[in-house]
Image (cartoon, rainbow, N blue to C red):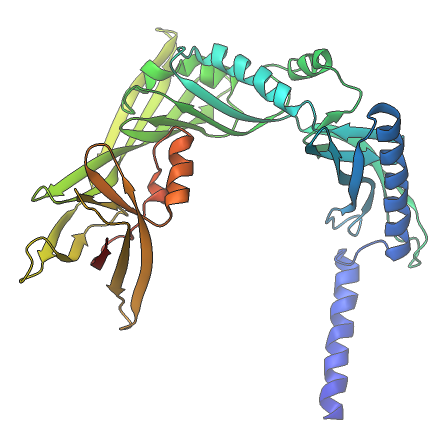
Length: 396
């Protein structure tokens, strides 16, 4: 037993040596953390007392970033939270100069950026644009590492740290200047989607591909939600000669009805490739592929009650949703026999639609939130897995 214990201790010691050589151990101790946190509390609270009366600072947390060269440097900047005018806000404190950065102007920045994006994409007034703009503001701060194996602090040079906030002294004019300080804009897009009443097969009717690729080639994927599906748009090529390519993955909603009593709904996939044609100074559709889902299903009714559904069996390779016609059910028990002879079982809620179809959903609250956003469910939001046979027990 003792021999095994010694062997275990040797392994731990060896791992500690390896981690120290590769920079896996933190380059600071608890005293360093207390000093950094305490300075941030003082700097943050001092600013709020001076500039935002009745603001309440209630959280400060130090920041350490994994780095092989600097051994997990403890940054001389902290993040925290404060309560002001009935709202919780995020803030960052740079102990080097005592400056505070807050997210109070983010809603204005988001609105300003939406206007920029809408004008560039040449969207119509009927289309809804939702953008989550991240200013990705750069803070210059110092970091602390070990000095010759001891725990004393050592200045290791400046570190760039990016935050979703603006300097606390910024006004709306400063925010405008910051957004337009680089072409086409300064900052990042965390999320962007468009809600339109046009078909998902008519991408060029929804946005200007030329403006999108030229001005927003470095942004995240653009999601477009349509009445008949949704699509994900990406700039996939931007050469030195100015040629650009765009890919659009399109998921079009399809449905199949059985005996006017049961309907399954799913998404078929399209892929479209656009390329910039210099002679026309615009984008043209170069190729379009359609991947039709191989799908059929059958419904088995009770032998004693023709209106009672015993089971639904779907053959296909894509997830789907199930609808029942004129079904007065508030909840449904779903069962499925798995390959290991176990039985999957879940109680589901129902969602009533105006066209007399009742949808089986995992949560009526979740379904409500999706539709309140104004767009369709995506392929990932469909409820039932592919290639499954489900038995339904219905409850009024």
